[in-house]
Image (cartoon, rainbow, N blue to C red; front, side, top):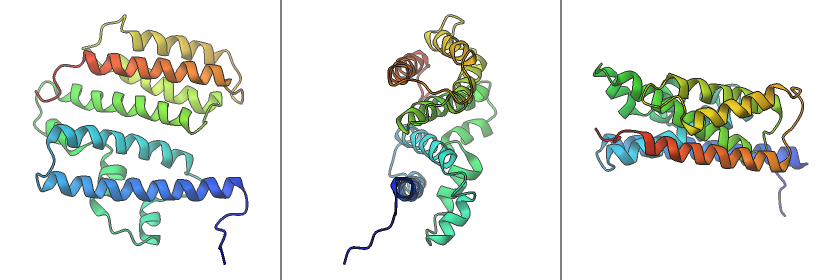
Amino acid sequence: MEVKLWNDKREREMYENFGELYAIIKATEKLEKAYIRDIISSTDYETECHKLIAHFKTLALSLKDTVPSIERFADTYKMDCPAAINRLVTSGVPATVEHRAASASSSTTSAAIVAECVQNFITAMDSLKLNMVAVDQVYPLLSDLSASLNKLSILPPDFEGKIKMKEWISRLSKMGAADELTDQQARQLHFDLESAYNSFMAALPNAGS
C-alpha cells in the first residue's frame, strides 16, 4: 500500500523543500571534507561552495516558518554534518574566503564583498525560480544585491549590473508590497540578473590570485 506523505500541494512542496535542504547539507559536508583532504582544488571548492551557500540561504528563507532551526533539522534527521552546519549557518562564506580574510591583505575586503555579491546574485535568481515574485520578497533581495555591488570598488559606476538593479528597485518601489511581478516581468528580471552576473564574473580579477 502506498503511503502518502502529503495531503495537499503546500505539504508536498514543504516535503520537497525538506528533501532539497537535506541534500544541500549533505553535499556541503562532502565538499568540506573533500577540500580538507585536498581532493578538490581551491577554485572548484570555492565555486561550488558559493552555489551551495546561496541555494541554502534561499531555501532557509522560504522555510523559515517550518524550519526555524537548521541545527534542530539536522538533529531530527540524524545528519551528523558539523562541517556543513558551520559553513552554511555559522560562517556563511567558503573556507577559502575566510582564509583570505585571515591573511588581512589589502584585497581582503574585496574577497569578502565578492563572495557577498555572488551569493546575492544566486539568491535573487533562485528566489524567482521558486516563484517568490511578490514585491516584498523581491525588493529586499535586489536591494541587498545593489548595496553589495556598490561596495565593490573594482566595479565602475556605469557597471551594467548596478544600473539594471537601480532601475528594477525604482520600478518595484512604485508598486505595493503585496503586488506580484507578472510572468513576463519575472522572466525579464531573471534574464537581467543572469546577464549582470555574467558581466560581474567577467569584470573580476583572476580569482586564483
